[in-house]
Image (tube, rainbow, N blue to C red; front, top):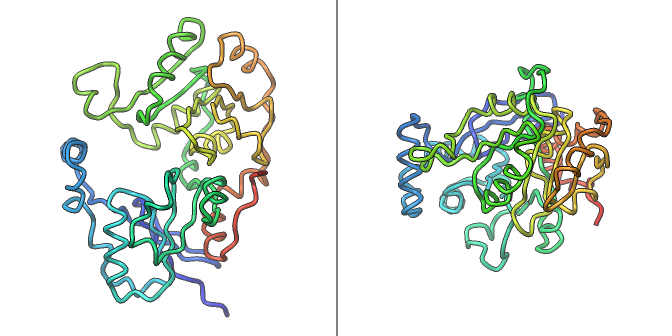
Length: 308
């Protein structure tokens, strides 16, 4: 009988996954805090990012040798965590996973030189020589999300990342003619302005997405990798409006389901929303589930959903 590797994923707290082929444990890189203390942490780190060490969940670095594989995401404090793991007696496989675009490989911190580098972005993979694992989602988050009556035509919820001006322009352009719900999330500005919202739970976020006809995503510059919204649109069987001009290179792309535009007009959006939706098959969705993503990493198999 082949021993299944015991794997630690450092990116968020979640219930472990154990099946015939894998054993996954999940931990957050940050200490668990109350809502008020989380807000204080956000303010402190905005003004002094070097304070991150005091907020790290360093208990995750104990008893590392009970794991065969560690997958560390590009989360806050990840470079300190990587360095600490390098200095420990851990002898297993070390994987660093870029869940955001990599701007410059030459600026990779020294601790990562000892790690396998994987990425969610196919073009970063080609450009920097990283292994391509693709985007993924924890399918268990969708089990309690039931089919909802459509209340919105367009939905967005997220933090700035430089995209708020474009999203606000879109909202102002179509908001009087379409049912639009945009949550501009900023825990600090929300204290002083009704234009911004506090973070909501992921469950509530998915429930709101499920009430919309189409999800809206605006990418960071120079990003080809899928956002979570794109995969959520697959899982929830929703249309997607995106400014990612490379989305048609993905195997699941369907013209009637995805509108690609930097600045869609009201007429363009209405025409798109009126087109019949073509349901995604289970075979199109399966590769993006976390268990299949983890299987690719553990078996050292790169993803093949993108056509260069």
